Structures are given as structure tokens and as C-alpha cells.
Image (cartoon, rainbow over all chains, first blue to last red; front, side, top):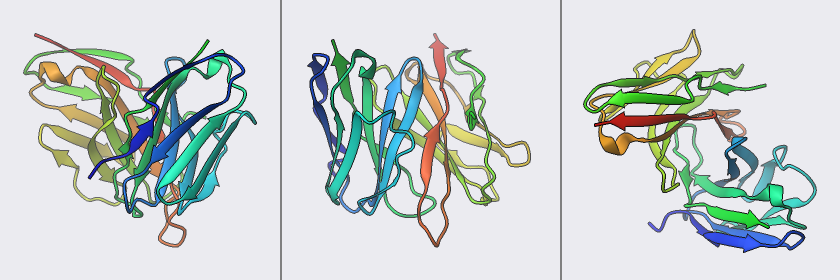
Length: 114
Length: 119
């Protein structure tokens, strides 16, 4: 199994630019989570999807952030326009349906906005 | 409101000794789950152990065990026989909101504890 695949692994961009982070879940996993990790705020849940439907986006910081899951094998997190305070590691994590199931993390996308 | 509390920002332990990392949580859901993850300096998140709220026994996985005290809402991680490779951040996480009807749930994380194993 290839695991959760995220791209890009590292991105440096200028303030104001659009950033798109991508995630390919493990095949068969029907829940998908986007997390943001910073030193100050730790691991924050931004949004999660179940069967491609956004269930809870209350963690999305503001309108500059949007997430989509057009099909079971792909999700994006977009920041437009990006700001320096968006610099963080963004993790995608997925799991199969079921109360006991583990969530598996991708390796993260390290974003720096200058 | 903080739903998961890890009161130890940093811990030190001597190699080969046991160490307990604290985690308390807050939920009104009768059905929930608790996880521990390890994050080494390389950044990946590694699953360690899981405890369901209805599990009768404390979870164990190799050198990891979870001291689950439901009434106190605590789920402490015990690492036995610490190794240098155990030096990392450790995160307690909670799944709540899951029901057989909705199958919806969310997993939130505590602030983490940094563990350093001393040779």
C-alpha cells in the first residue's frame, strides 16, 4: 500500500500567491482530514470529509482557505491569497469507516510564505 | 475549550527506564476513541496505540500501553524500557462524534509532549 500521498512536500511562495496542496488517500479510505501544524497552535483540524462530502469545516481559519474532494482518490487544500502567517506543515490523513480504525497521515506539505 | 490536555510540555527519561506521558480529555459522547501518535524530528506522524471508550482492557502494543481511567477521563501512555529512538513529540488524540448511524467522526489532537531519552 502506498500510504497517504501529499504534494508538494515543500513549497516556498510569495505573499499573495495562490497555493494548492494535494492529497491522495489510501485506496478504500472514506474519511479524509486536513490538519495544520505550527509551533504556536499545534495540530489543528481544518476540515474533514466523509465519502467525499465535507462534514465539518469549522476549523478552516478564514475565507482564504478552501478544500475540495472531487472524488474518492483526490483532495485539495487551497489558500488564496497566501500570507506569511499561513506558513506551517499541512497534513492530510485518512481512515476507513469504523469506530476503531486508525487514521494514517501523509508526510506533510511544508509551506513557507515569504 | 481545550478538549485534550497534555500537561507536560517536555519530559526526560533515562534509557531503559519507563515513562508515563499524561493525557486528559473532555467529551460528552458515550462512544469515543483515544489515540497516541509519535512525531520524530523528521516530522512524520506514527500511530502507536488506540483505546476505545467501551474497551474493558487497557490497550497494549509492544512497549506501549495505555492507562485508561474512564471516570477520570485520562488516557496516559506508558513506554517501558525507553530507547534513544523514543525521543520525539507524542500526541494524544481523541475521536468523537462517531455513531453507527452517522459514521461521522472527527479526530482532534492535544498540544503534545516532547520526550527526550537520555543515554
